[in-house]
Image (tube, rainbow, N blue to C red; front, side, top):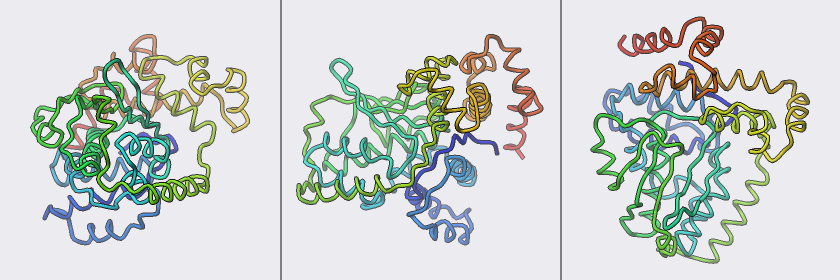
Length: 337
């Protein structure tokens, strides 16, 4: 199955809670479960491989809410040093700041940040690609679950935002999250009252917190640098394309460089803006056709910055050998078979 892969990876630790849920399903061969449990948690997995795993897991279990259920299966210590640094902080605000600062120890290409929006706070959980439902659900639900465990309160944010379309059955969202969920949003995010940031952490330990932060900082400093400039361009471009923008200037501003520097650095890495744009458009187009089935072909064309639908259809046929409609139909047929 074709998936979006823009050069980033995440820690194998994210797979562990999914495997716990898979073990509960008798339809999954024991040998497969044991092979997954044997994965070294210190290894890293590409976004593309992760999407394939999740897609197959949802199909095998027939559990459309797998991401929510995996978030509930998280156990103490699953996220190693980042979790211990957050767990030992003094307040919810300090815990969120830890996750924002050290998310690179768990996921590449992530940009978690908090935005004050009038009387509310919005914690944006931005990642470098648009993901299918199960991964979006996991992303928001795991942080709601962890926040409840760290504070000892059954915390309910004011709103939960997810990027995918609203499914027919939303009962598990109500049960797991307990708050209104907004679908088809620009980002996965949690919206909450700023006063919640002062909520104390029940296992607060300032000495341990400082130790864990230093350790996390050292680990982050020693991590191999995989952020080639072209990968940063691809991530910024993917974000820009969500609004239908393709201009060099917009992407350059996102990366805080001049357009001239943008072009020069891409040339230094053996590529150019046009080629990168072509690649990202192709990958996002395939992703939208697979996972955003409520989006029409014309909408996808607009989101990818094409001036009109026929131009998108010609480009897609050049990329894949089939039209967007034919490609989407072939996916349906594969899933039925």
